[in-house]
Length: 386
Picture 1 (cartoon, rainbow, N blue to C red):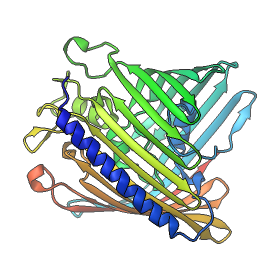
Picture 2: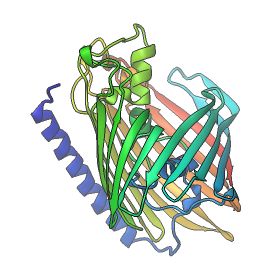
Picture 3: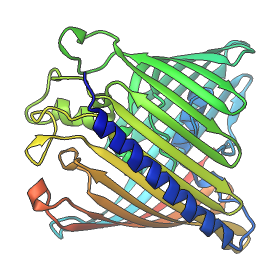
């Protein structure tokens, strides 16, 4: 596959500009902030914690988070999360609806077999979306060196997807990738590097049914800052793109070419202030019959810029988060062009949080295949974990 060098240069320049602007804004916001308590890290989605355990923390570039309490028996530790949500929405056609759902049930089992081997099993159920299934199953091999390896079904290290709001960021909806893979990790002095190999679900010509897809992940993290760059040779294997290609009309059996993907992300967490910035996108165009935009092959991408600040709420601590997210050439993937979010969350009891979120989506223009309309969603979430 050939990648247009000019497009890559443009993407890199765009990302660099966004990173610089976000760092300047976050520095000003941090300077002007008057509170003295940390952002409530317990409110982060346990799904990211489970991914962090799954890969021995060697390829995840998110800010360090406090691990939840867990039930244990000897060398076996069990972690769990239950989220119940009430949602009200008005779609692009101004049709409103509401529902109460068991949004998430996650169960993670982490077992130490010996000093060099441990396993992680993650079970997941999402009402109306994911039936109870084995979401993750990994064998981790490690010793006293900086090197380690993970083998099994996992979320490969393409994107960080850190967030302080209730809904998944559009970067995750575009880029999250679950595959059966072999992952090699390296970590030393806060720097991480990972390389993984997997069999793409949609191959190209003679590459079908061969483990020819791969990814590379580079990052750095300390207690207050993290940053990383990830590359995947086949962005068609992300969950969103794969679902569109394999289940859309008509279903795609093989790709015209393998399209690579890039993720650039950074996060800062200092005192009461946090900032997240992420970009995920294809590095070349898909064939028009696969994903199109404006009559030509699409090059889908998504970004997330998020700020959060903590503040006292009685005896406990609350978090106010705002986010602006956007996509480009992703209308056929069912993603909005922009999303603006505001969310407030707090712990009401130990390991139990209550969150309120409102977001507005704006669809693509009619000329691009959208409706030009807006959609509003309000969510109340009660979550507890052990």
